[in-house]
Amino acid sequence: ALNWLVSNKILVINMSLTGPNNAILEASITAAIKQNVFIVAAAGNQGPTSLPLYPGAYKSVIAVSAMDATNHIYRWSNNVDDIDCTALGVNVVTSQGNEKFGRESDTSMAAPHVSVALSCLLLKHGNNKTKALNELTSLAVDLGEQGKDTTFGYGAIYPPKSAL
Image (cartoon, rainbow, N blue to C red; front, top):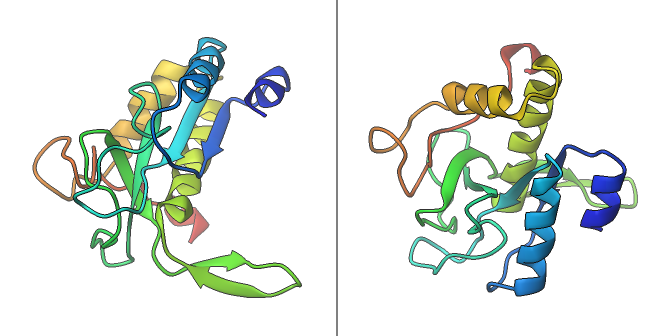
C-alpha cells in the first residue's frame, strides 16, 4: 500500500494502526520517507504507561496523541517520548457505514487532523517539506510542560478558524 501511495505522488500518508516494531514496516516507511513523503501515525491507545507502539514510534514518523475539546489528553493515549503533537480525537463524528454516523475516541481519530493540516501546509509552501513541518510545529499550541513533552509533543494542532 505504501508503495502504491508513493508511486501515485501522495505526499502525506496517514496510518491509523499500532503494534510492535516490525522490520518490514520500518523498511517500507523508510523507503517512503526517502521519496519525500510524510508519514503521520496514531500514537496508540494503550494508555500513559504503554511501551512505544509502531509506526508512530519510528523517529521519522509524526506521532499523534488525542485530546478532547477541552484540551484534556485522552485517557488511553500513549504517553511516550515519540509524541510529536496532539489533535482532537475524543468524541469525533465519524461515518460508520450504511449512511449512519457515530462518535469515536482514539488516536486514530486525531492523526487525520494533523495529516490534513500538513497537507495544506505543503500546498501553501510549494511542497517544501522543511517549511511545512516548521510551520506545523510553530502552529502547535503548547499545552503541557514548556516545549516538547511526552503528553502533547510540541502541542495541539487545531483546525484553522475558517474551517470551524
